[in-house]
Length: 199
Image 1 (cartoon, rainbow, N blue to C red):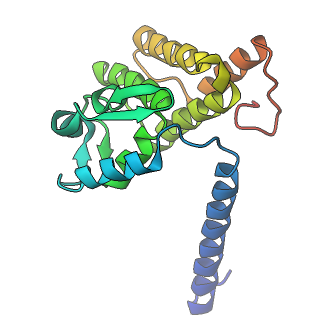
Image 2: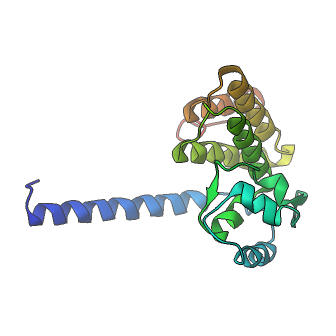
């Protein structure tokens, strides 16, 4: 494309189109996810409580401010401190972001353990895409074995934490997906190649 006004406008339009296509694809993907185990009314009330805090806020600041607040879900009752890491390495830009994190307590609890383990080893630092990859892997495991008390989530979180302690760095997102797929297949769950875990 020529480097003139028309070329730059075409590039900008193409980029906008690609972003819209990605957003639509993500929405369609989310349509297959199971309903969050926390009542939306409860989450809305919790989000309202968070609005009195100043954002962006670190997870440690949120735990200090609202860590005792309890959230009831189909999986039990959880304190916010059970779902968010007491670490400064994780920052939330808005109450909505916090709400999204705690709406799946099993996934949030696993991410809390992983982030706190990474925080102990300063050389193990998260990138945003890597963190998102871990969380998506946990969500996929939850969708696959929701009836098995989320054993897969615990197993993979333990595996990640083990790697952090052994190698003092985070395993790659693909390694985590590969390990999750191995767990699924060894426990009789089918994982197709066109799925997130299908590496």
